[in-house]
Length: 267
Length: 212
Image (tube, rainbow over all chains, first blue to last red; front, top):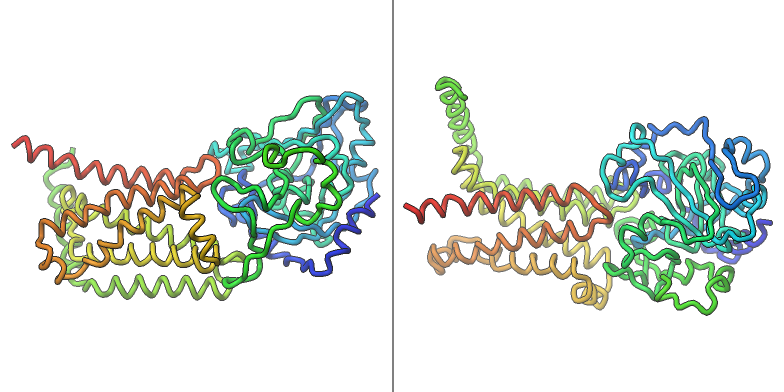
């Protein structure tokens, strides 16, 4: 396992990593504020030790799993992925993490399960952004089971070999590189296997603007802006926009998941 | 209730403030505004506005324009209700507002969107861009006539009528900001609220004048 992820980025010799500063000072994490620099300023308030994830729903072994327990059974590897935000900026991030499939296999997915729901920590005393009802808190996201089991889908615990900083979703977050960034939910406290399409925060707040799938797609615009191009963070004031790639450049690996689906309807 | 002494002290304060303000020539504002815009651009070009300077500069210019709109709309209520006289600076505030809207537009069009066809498509297809553009166009005749020659040429009444375009322009600017925010956000609504309150403050004294 993991070979596919490595192969996916090995093809792109032009993938230049964003710097630690770029990755950790320009963040969307609305629980800490809506400005890009709010997370780096406020996220230190979040207590990340001890940490546990409640895994429930249609699984063989439901329960509260401590982070140490989860990490003791997986192998951490590096994955260099493009990150494409729905706001049309992007980065290249060297994540450290493990395949979500490994965790799901360990807890045992029941036969009828078709989706995976995720939830972010909801601690108003540690997350000042929760005072403002930007979204219906807590932040929630979801994947189809086959998306969750895909070898490109990882749970990240580090960046550049360092523990993942709070503003980037410490201590453990999802990374789904072919979807807009908001699908890659941060600071996960709960994972639920279900047979129904789960609640997804942005999708629920603006269904016209944010689909459940939210696959990166240069041909389907956000109603308020074009998704055809993106700004790679770190290029400075005079950086040229670059074309956005279908499925964020992971078309070869993931297009088969959506065969026969009208991606303009299921955006 | 305020005692007579307190009121006298307050009016002393206002008089002191007005006397101080009279000593400031309006060109100082133009200099400060141009200097501030240039300083922000310098910061953006040299990494001082963070790792994504295009968005940062675009937003800073846009926010400054909204803040100046609010200050400009506050000039008349401040004089009427508190006796603070910012009148000598009103033209400079207005011209600077236009200047920052223009800077905001140019950063958006040239540095952010980058291609003329995409700029044009955004203006036509994205409503929040369309109304932002609308606000900008409404300010154009104001900027062009912000000189003594135009006041004389148009006559005071007609000139004042033209400059009432700042009211719809202010509302469009604030709605533009509310519309582009993702999710429910407070700050854009604060600007819109301030602008609506400042506009409402204007309509009341007129009604009493009519009643008289």
